[in-house]
Length: 193
Figure 1: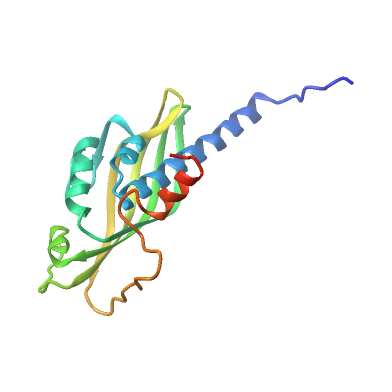
Figure 2: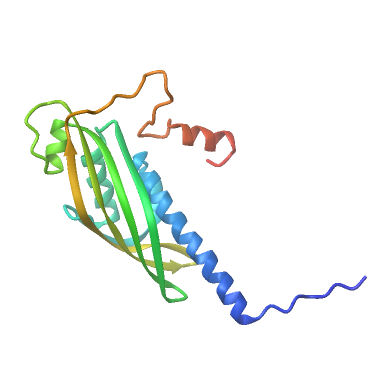
């Protein structure tokens, strides 16, 4: 039996590569959110190139400084969640892309941590801080891997709520801001870590 090789045009191969590139970039964005939410510095390093720059409004600098800034600002809060919206990707060439990703964050904070974020909190109660904005990223593909080379965080709005917060039930599986979280346990059981 003779096998026939399909005739795949260069144009089709280029389109397929773009689809793969888009998914790899979206995967980097999802891994970034998990790394911050679970306070995982190694995973955070993996989404940036080693020489990357980050402008996070109150922090501007390299990746190691960003990790320190995130630890300082968010190590104490019991809950942080990033929700990523549309991710618009425009390729400059085969190795660069302009990526704009909308985000929403929810942070459950004590009053002291809320003040570190600039909130005017009169008491020591629980605070919910929400922020909306955009990640404006220069992605570069180096040695076959897409990572963030330069990030600018654009904040669109922030809100602090101190009333009407509902607590979580202790018998629920609760999120954890470390590698004992359910996702890490699942990954380990599947041999992914």
